[in-house]
Length: 545
Image 1 (spheres, rainbow, N blue to C red):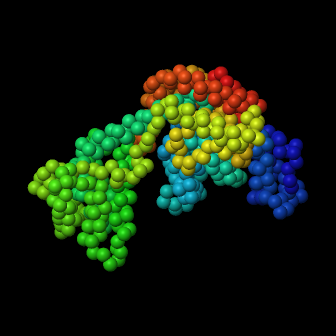
Image 2 (cartoon, rainbow, N blue to C red):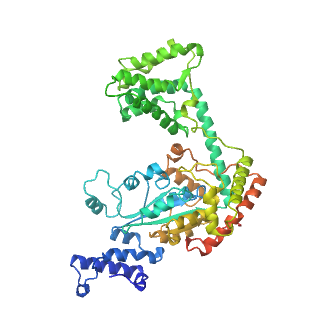
Image 3 (cartoon, rainbow, N blue to C red):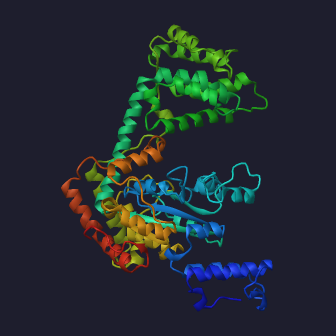
């Protein structure tokens, strides 16, 4: 039996009643007359046919969180953009809702980063481990069986990765991933006055540069201490091909100066240094190599990142490294090779200490940023030059502008760019998502200024769109929201280098004027798209086009 157009447009309640009847028919438990029907299935599973009819219904009307649990289905709510538009604040609200399970990480980056996407849905689902407070916890555990790490199977879950909307691949991957009967999804996109958003992104990038300067200063200040900590705690572990055990990791963390460890770039520094050690192991034939050889090769790799501060002590430094690497007491047990012995060797062999070679971190570790005048004018001129080469495209046509933006901006797999205007071209990005297979009715738009001034009304409408009950949050002022962000995502700034705080400097007036004029055609397209594009949420933005 194939559902007619009339049947496919029936309300959600009757649709679910029909599905229930079909299920009873299948199980033989029907007592409502469906047992007298001719076989409605033939070669088609009518339950799936009925469920496929659901997209014809307004997403705000089907199904609720309770229905999702009842039907053992799952909905994924994705805050897909845009950067510097208040997505962290929205994530703080959603993560506090009792019927929404938020991801462990604020930004999952599953659909935009190739390395994550290739790992498959199992890795993505692991962001929502099954917990006792989840709906029908025992039933889900029983359904999943003896899995070591069971994950949420039904109900509503959410994540916030604001680069998705700007990514060339994310929307297509989202549509294909969730185009299955048992899964459902919603996209939430926040927008902001485009010039303000671009300037805020530039300021955020500038703060990252300042963080990098702090890292350079700390590496100069603590070169000896960091070197000793690596030699004492990390090299022995990697020499045997092991990961850092908790005891050794704690000892290493206690060894590293607290000021150095608290830097935003510390995690990235650790990743780079780990790669150096892995290269040291990879270059050895471990089957035939004795541990001392492997260890020496690892130490040599790390040593390549440091050198004697005084060139005349280069030989003494090499001798020091050689003695450490060949020491019989240099084992996984960190206590066997004491800090006092390292200090004694340091004092007797290298009088003036060591320095860290920044080149060891590679050419991309430290970022470069042009002045705002150069950065913004270069971005605008680059687009205009590209547009001239695409002269046949009409800038007043949303479809053609989407093609133009796609041709002129080569978006990277990872979301750090110097193209500050690109992420403010909301209409082209939204249209690309729709062209990728995402229905406009699954997209909910929020103007960040309206959300900041009056969040409760927008949240109420969003709750309905998501399918969860309305909820009165305990925080509403900007100060409360910022505190909640830090409470919900305490390690976000440290692990990413990004900051939650906003712009601190005024945008130069000429740059603002030029940028606003440049963005006007894109804003006019967005205005039309919000009013008539079929998307949910706000139908107009608060800023002037």
